[in-house]
Length: 319
Ligand SMILES: [Zn+2]
Image (cartoon, rainbow, N blue to C red; front, top):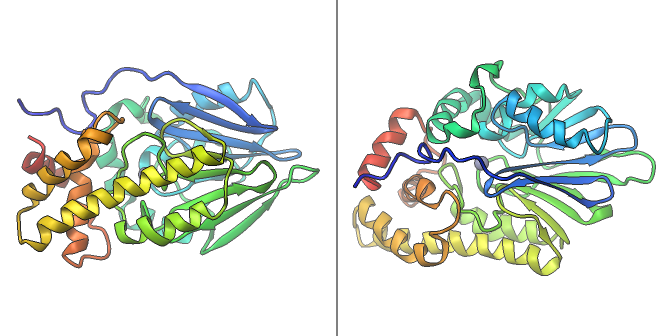
C-alpha cells in the first residue's frame, strides 16, 4: 500500500509542554513538532523561532504571557524553513535576526519552501491565510552577534557554527544558564530532516562546534529538552549517528553505481531499527537520501524543493 505523502496524514494534535528551564529561560516542546523558546532580558524578551503561521505563534505567546509580559525586542530565527519563520509577524518584534546566509536563502527559495512545507506538513499551518508573506530578517550577521540582556541577566551569543541542516543555521548560547538553543542542528529523539543539508560538514566540524559550548541545557529543533551535560551530549551524538548512518549507506550505494532507490532502501533498512519510531522518520528519509545522493554527485548547493519535485521523489522512493 502506498504511504501517505510526507506528514500529510498526520493530523493529530500534539501535546505541548512549556518548561521554565532556568530563571527567565523558557522552552516549549510538542512531542516532535518544532520547538520554540524565549529568554528574558531585564526589560525585554528574546524569542527563538516563529512557528508556521501567526495564529500558531499566538498560541505559543499566550502560554508565554502567563510568565512574563515583557515586549519581544528580538525574534531570532535559526534558519529559513517555513514552519519556523512564517509566524514572525505575531511577535511584533523590534528586529528579526538571522544569519546573512538565511536571508539569502529566503530570497532564493523562500516562496518554494513555503509551498513545499505546507504540502508536507499541513497540520502545522494553523490558519495559513494569516501569513502576511515571507519573513525578512532585518538584522543579519556572518559568524557572531551578541545581545546584552541588561541587569544581571547576562547575554546571548548567536553563532554560525558551519554549514549543517541548511547553509545558514545559527545557535543561541546563554552562558549564564548554560543553555543552548540549537535549532535543527540537533534533534532529541526526532528524525533529522536533511533535504537542504551539508551532511559532511554537519556531521564533523559543525557538530563539534555545537558540542564545544558544553551546554547543560539544550533545546533542539524537535523533541524533549536535554537537561544535564550527559543528555546534551547524547542528543548531539545521536544526531551525528543518524548522519553517519546515512553517509555510510547512501555512500556505499553511490560508490557501487547503484540506484537512488537502492540507496534509499539500504539506508531505510539500516536506520529503521534505531530511528524508525522517531517522529517524521518516514516523512524525511526520501528527501534526505536524495539530497545526500546529490552531494555524492558533487552538487554542493542544495537543489530547491518544489511541490512538484517533492511528489516526484516521494513517488520514486516511498510509494
Ligand atoms: Zn529546518
